[in-house]
Amino acid sequence: MPVGATRMQRSVEAIPRISLMLPEASVSRHSESGRITVDAKLDLEVGLDRDEPRRAVEQFEQFALEHDLPMGLTFKFQLALDELLTNVVSYAFEEGAAAPVITLALHLTDDKLEARLQDNGRPFNPLRDAPVPDLDLSAEDRRLGGLGIHLTKAFVHALNYERVDGWNRLYLVQPLGAHQEDPT
Picture 1 (cartoon, rainbow, N blue to C red):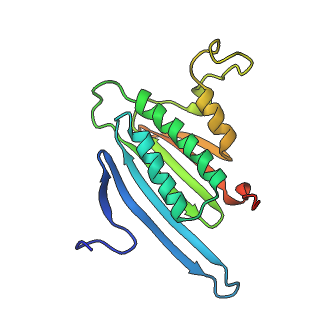
Picture 2: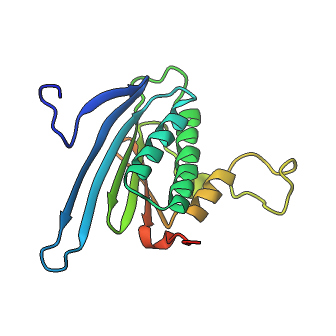
């Protein structure tokens, strides 16, 4: 193990242009109830390359598998993250923007999964500013935009946006109990 690294957290360059902080996790058992609790984190810095959203979603998938997240939750969160990251990579920054930054922070506890997606691109609140898709029209007749955030709203329990000190911050929260897998 490199000097300065700990067993719980090490910084690596996992994939070109994605800086990955390996999952930081702690598992503990309550002395009275014997219940095991989980506290795991994964932080990613995402570049502007068009492949970055897919790579970040793959890192989330690995994190989800390592922590036995339900497949339904994993699939829906993957779709939401892919949509949101693709929009940021595609539209948040003007050509040649100075020092663009996109980060994704995941936090898993024993009762919920949280994500914070932030970027220092142009202001955009997808919960307010994205067009509402006309689902009565065929895909060919429907205007572009809005369908991805519509699906994200349907897939994720809570979404919140804020603009703070030049940063767009979008928070996603999904209770784990909302995705009980059918054992059959």
